[in-house]
Structures are given as structure tokens and as C-alpha cells.
Amino acid sequence: MNTALQSPHTGRRLVASAIDFVLVPLVSFLVMLVSGAMETADAYAGNQIWLRGIGLGVAGYLLLNGWLLHRRGQTVGKMVMGIMIVDATSGEKAPWWRLILIRALFFPLLYLPLLFSLVGFWALLPLIDQAFVLRRDRRCLHDLASGTAVVARVALQQA
Image (cartoon, rainbow, N blue to C red; front, side):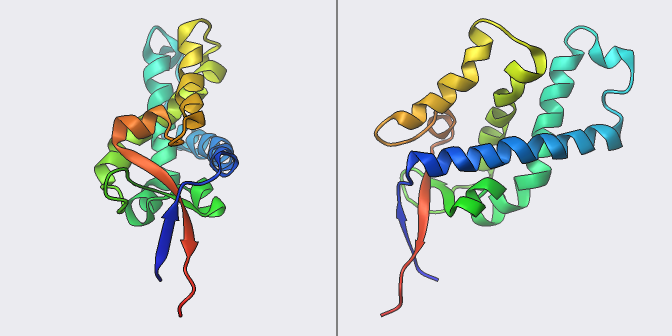
């Protein structure tokens, strides 16, 4: 199938993020239950909760979206909304390592204010990342860090 790529409306991107924002914690919670990562009191001591929380978030994100990111450059939310992640310079499917190693690390940051009741600068980090979508090129901070762009996937009709 031939596709044309164009920058999606900000609303489509926000809805895709909202879908992932709901689904990833559910998968992360299942990972937590199966692995027992948060069963002991030690898991909540010191920096353990940070490390385990971020680890569970990344694990949930990758279990839900890893294969789709690798094969199609999409998360579940992006697939539902008809958008995909591409290399910002070439417009081709972004390399898996950019999608998984760089972008996947940003996603758990969205939950830090909710999970850890953070105040101050750290609570603003996810908002700063997402606010970048309001720029002309509609690239969030995690897009800039990974050299990717989110584009609409529109099927061209065969002539």
C-alpha cells in the first residue's frame, strides 16, 4: 500500500497519547503482579520505588507497544488514530533503537507526577515534553531527542 505522510492534527496526537496513557499502566500493573516487583517493603524504601516504578513503566510500554513500534512505527494509540513515527529527516520508518531505547524512556515520565506526588520542576517535566507538540513542526521533546516525527498515515487511492 502506498502512503503519503503529513503532519497530523495535534488533537489526533493527544488522543493517541491518552489511549496509551490508559493502556500502559494496565499492562504495567499486570507486570507488577506477575513479577512481584512491588511486594516487599524494601521496594518502597529510598530510591527503590523510583527505579522500580520507571522499570515497570518501561516494561509495560514495551510489552504493549514494542512489536508495533518495531514493525510499524506505531503504538496502540497511534495505530488507532492512524498516525505513525518516522525518521524526521528521511520520512522513512524510524530505526527500532530510536523508538525503543530513546522514546520508550520518556513515556514513564508522564506518570511521575501521578505515581510519586512530585512537586516542583520534576512534575513539570512531562508537561514541558508534551507542550513541545504546540510548536509549528508538532514535535515533542522526545521527538527532538530521538530524531523522529509523528505523521499521519493516509492511504493513496490507486489510479
